[in-house]
Every structure is written in C-alpha cells, then in structure tokens.
Amino acid sequence: MGYVAVRGGGKAIEESLKLLEYERVSTSSPWSTDEIEGTFPELVDQVMGEASLYAPRLAALALKQAQGSPDEAVFLLRAFRSALERPYVSRPVDTGEMRVARRVSAAFKDVPGGQLLGATRDYSHRLLAFDLETEGPEELAEKRAELAEHFDEASAGAGASATLPRVLDYLRAQGLVSPVAPDDAEPVDATMVPLTFPAPRSVRLQTLARGMTQAVEALGYAAIRGFGPAHPTVGELRQGRVAVAVDHPLEPGGADNAYYLGSVPVTEVESVFMSEGDGAEDGLSLAIGYGCVLGRAETKSIAMSVLDRCLELGDKRYPTEDEEFVLYHVDGVEATGFISHLKLPHYVTFQSKLSSVRGTHDHDIDQEAAAALEAKEATDAAAL
Amino acid sequence: MLKRYERTRALVEGDSTLARAIVRDVEDELGVGAVAVLDEPREELVMVKVRETAHGGLFYLGEALMTSCRVRLGEAVGLGMVLGSDRCRAYELAVVDAAFAGATGEHRAARWEERLGEELERIEAREVEDARRNAATKVDFSTMKVES
Image 1 (tube, rainbow over the protein chains, first blue to last red):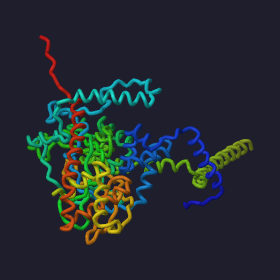
Image 2: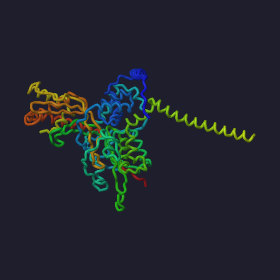
Image 3: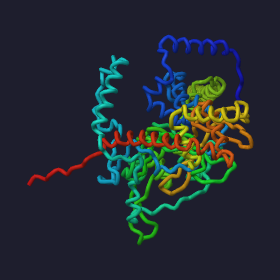
Image 4: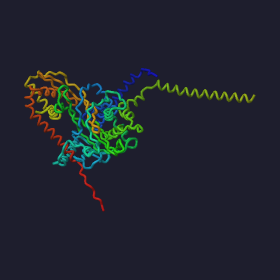
C-alpha cells in the first residue's frame, strides 16, 4: 500500500513552531552556551557522545535550542555534522597516553599508580543540596577559592604523573590474558555504510560508542542479569583527555611531524570475563570486553564493554549476544525517529485497519443471520 | 629543533597570543601582503580513530569539529588545524606552519624555539598541577585487623 499526500497543515505547523518559540522565550533565562556548558558538563558530554561529535559549544547550543531534550539535541548535532566535510582522520589514539583524571580498578587493590578516584559521585550521599537553590556568583567564587586553597595544601609535595600504566598489562605479563598484537586494518565507518551482519568489530564498537546512553546501559544490565555472559569485573576504568593529531596530507613523517589539533575527553573500560578455552586442555582463561566513549560516561562505557563481550560470544539464544538486536536498536536518532513517527498522520493505514476490522464484523453478522434463518426454517418445518 | 607536533601543541594548548606574535613577526619581516590565503578558515570534521585494547584493532570513536586554513608564504604552503571553531587561530597556525617550513624557515624556527619551549614547559606544569590535585584523591588502603 502506498502513501497518500495530504495538504492543509501548513498554517497549523507554522503557528505550532511559533507557540514553541513563545513558550521557550517565556520560560527560559537568557543563558549563554558557556553557562550551559559549565553548568551541565555531563549532559553536554552525553549529547556529544550520542551525536558522535565532539563540539562542546555546539552541543550546549543544541541543548538550549532543544529546551533540554537530549534526544532532540543529538538529532540537531547529527544534522549539523552531516552538512560538514570530513577531510581528515586522526592518527590512531593510544589511550595509554591519556591525561588521566580518574582511574580505578575493581580487580586489583594495589595497581601501579594507585586507585585514583578523581572527581566522582560514587561515594556521595544522594541527598538534595538545597543550598544550591540560592547559590549566587559571589558564593560560587568564595567556594572556588576555598577549594583551590584546600587542594594547594592537600596536594603539596605529592608526586604526580598525568599518564598511568594499564592495569591489565599486569595480567598480560602473567599470561592470564592473551597479549594483544596491534591490528592496523582500516576500520569500517558505520556512518558511511549500512549495517550488515555479521558486523565488523570496528562497526560494533563505533555503533555502541555512539549509542543512546540509556539503551546501551539497559542492554548491558540485561546481559549481566542473565540474558548474556556472567558478571564482569571492571579491570580498569580510566577517564581523561586524549590528544587528537593528524598527519600532513602530503609529507611523510611519523608522530613527530603530525599536527596537534587539541584533545578530547574519553572514558575507557576494560572488563574481565571468565572464558572457556577452545580445547578441552585449554581450561579457563580471562577475556576482555572493551568500552570507550566520548566524554565522561562511565556507566555507558562499562555497559559497552559488557555488550562488546556479548557480541564476541554471539550466542543468539540471548538477545544481548545477537548483534542485529543490539546494534539496530541502540542508536538514539533511529529509535526516537521511528517511534516518534508513529504520532504523525497515519489516516490511510488506519482506515485500512478499520476496514479489515469492519469486514470481520460484517462477516460475523452475516453468519449470525444465516444461523437464525436456518433455525427458523427448522422450526417452521417441525410445525408443519 | 622542535618538531611540528610539539610546536603545534605549544600553540594550540598554550598562550593564545603566541601564534599571533609569530604571525606579526613574519609580517614585519616579509610584509603584510606576503601571506596568500589559499583556503579561507573553514569548519570541517576530523574522525577520531582509536586503538582498542581488547583485540588491538582500530575503530572510529566519533568526529570532532575543527577549523582548518591553508596559506602560501613564498614557496611554502602552510596548514593550520585546530579543534573547535577558532578561525583566527587556524589562520595563525597555517602562517606559522608555512613560515617555519623548509630551509628558508629554519632561522624563524630557531628564533622562536626558546619561547615555544617555555610554553611547553608551562603546559607541562599545568598538567602536573592537575595531576597533583587528582593525586589527593588517591586511595590509601589499609587492611582492617581481624579481632581474635
């Protein structure tokens, strides 16, 4: 069945957009994008991660325009990036060189470099801080100065390195995790080719990294609860900034001759799973699930590492190990786009449904009438 | 002599007036009209490629907004690239890239070597300061005694 174009909504749509803008200007404060970026850095990170575009100012602008809807902001950023050329691909980022702001391991207590909590809410009381309701610029500056002074004292004389060794290198050195040889095969870009199955590993990782945060987390959670492999252990979670560098388009030369463009924040997770070897004599070993997302997004990154492992196992009895199920459904623009289209006019398709239902009813009525007539005839015959 | 990576890191992460100062120096030496803009500063994207550590493969993490500019200075062509939308910085980086290129640029590179080195030291100091603040959050484990 085809679609039928209808007219008549143009004026209503124009007025609806004006009403939306009227509501925005009537209720919002004239916040600058800097204020949004500064006040909601993790929301800005979430939008950038799902849009798969590092552009904090534009993500803040998208959030302002979308009146705080992350789905809509992601849509706006994805639309924006589709209008730009992409002539460059960075040199491979080595996350071992990350300027680490936070690094923890649930596997080992005494990891080289130590457990660095960084700035985290993990151990905070989840109580509303009512004092923030009336916090003004002076109070903010006062608190900032006080904490700066505190950290000057607390960190005085502390030896510190911005880079830290990988926790799982310890397991690799012991032979409990297979050493990894670099594979320089060019990745497939999920934004340039349609998803096909089985999907290359690079497509899986890219699709999960740009997946809708809550969708990735929900599927990762389901996998741990019994719809996938057993409970993982977070071998390492590191969060910080990595450098983005691009080679000269014409000149040869290694890393030294590349252009440094800046840095982007990322969260990376290596989760450890028990794994059975291929042969009977192989025994148990450890396997790694990998998660890495733009910005500060720890839960998503852990969930991604779980799903990475699930998809490596690929036992389709579990939905979380079925890559078609996982990869097709984690993309925010695809999911919200498809579900939202359901509220748009479907008058013709619905008429078709109605017609089918009515047809069934008419058929039922005909059958009832025929049965009544038959019964009447039988009664009349008996009376004769 | 500083290689391009360290030089551009100093100019991107460091004091934003440094690149401008080098551009002014070049203009004083060669005249304002010496720089021909081949590609005006424009917003583009760079795809960030990451090496994952579970299998050692490569994948695309996502894109980043960047601004690039291309200029010619005498025989040399310079490219300026920076994350974000700073058109001025992209232009300045392109001029510096051209001004320091090849044998003709060696004397300029030598003249600014020390200043760029100082900027790298300042960046390093800032990073160490951040790391030191983080070090205050390092967990100091102690094992609880078992009561007999």
